[in-house]
Image (tube, rainbow, N blue to C red):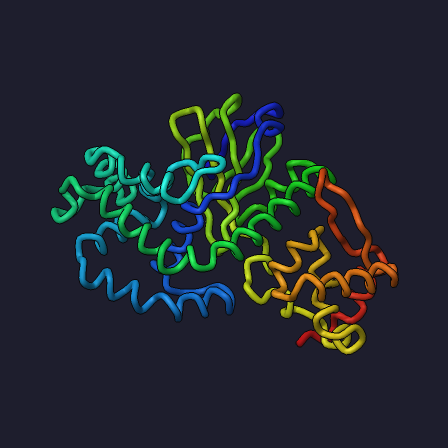
Length: 325
């Protein structure tokens, strides 16, 4: 397993960061795999996969670059620069395109665990990678970025509350398969057999993405990032309507029941609007009814007001959970 040695001060200084470039690279990984984990991903693939495959079919060099860069056990490092707080997509992708050609080839050889094929012995690989990422951003991510950003923000708020309630160990255990807190200042970041890294004193960021994927990246020994998928229902465009027990929907109405189910984790009104697709007025009315019924409660996290199920709300969801539509 791969693990990092990280002390308490480094964890305390760590933070969550949103990255349009990481979201775009996650989209590229999803296009490369061609298989969605839930209906939202499958709908997205149906809309964008044919044109993506046609693009690569017309450009065999870039197609080979993608296959080499997205190795089975290792992603070519130059494709995943460590995200910077507040960095725009263009600022991030410019870092990909500015990588030295010899460095890009070395990273690709590492991801392949062997020599480069002859067609990749060229100097324009960083520019080709940047151009492909710009295509994925422009065609498949940017048009939906506002909604994605709200979902990512919802995940960050929920994780931040989890840190305050349960500590960093609980958050690290739940980021993605293969991550867990091992104790003794050791954080397992994946299941691969790589040498441990001492990162105490470095900058550490956690970066959510909506596709169901993740990776780690670093720059020297100064900056490290863990990219992880949003939790479950938050990643799905129509998450508010899925997983609602039919009995609960009959009792409260499907939309209101969907809000109650989502509030197993703390969310703000704005985040509920983003996740459910309902209007602000509708979400506000559902919250007022649920508050009056004692099924949810309000909490404050800094300047944000969060809503979460009460014990009575938990009992109601669990009691009606045997019949799920």
